[in-house]
Image 1 (spheres, rainbow, N blue to C red):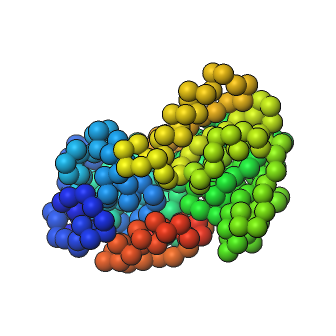
Image 2: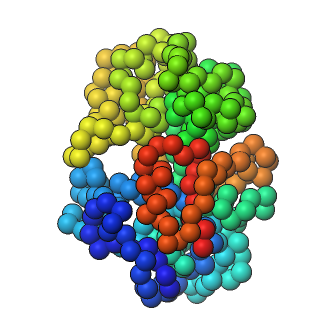
Length: 320
């Protein structure tokens, strides 16, 4: 099968179109013929091996343990293991795996679900990782309640476009912060007010702030919260090659016990229950992926560069 693989950490130059053996299902696996995959910031972090902390988290110290990048996918079940009863060949599915930038990928039943009928393969592939992050940030870390006032910073990006819609579906009043070219998009997703960060500030009085951008200090973000509001840090860059965006999470964790406001980081987790929750929101027409651009498999390096530049409106997908 064709796949985009790497043998060492580095820039997009380490990615090559390679022939690899098709994965085998084994007793408990599900092999999927990939029809579409998605690109998120985690892809380039694992490609580069930065921050170096990720190498110590089991991804490989000197070189990546998994050669093929990509986590999100949508496709058709190709084969299942003898212990698998939930799926059968021919089922259209979406979910996560290790290595979706390939013609075939191996996953497990807890990481896959039936594809929402109203979505194309490209739209379905855009959902899992970014929508998991948005859902868990709002519901679990943010403890979102109806009628709360929520601000999503980075509202026009992959996580942000899902966060605006999910917060709205949960009954919150949602404002968004984004660049000039994304203002109308964020407004169309249900944001009450949209602030162009190049021209204006967003003020204060928020019960919950989700910060996906990572370029504001904890002090400035706290000033925009209510006295007992919640800040959830769910992304961003900076802090150098050793700890990267984890640095702000650590500072928030250390400061948290000394202030009334709740300062929280997030490391999202893939799980079947949340995948089904997202599927239900999609089928209820309360959640729709936003696709910026589609690239072919051979164009994966260009797709990663496009996301890395930070200008994508919503999600970037790979079609196979």
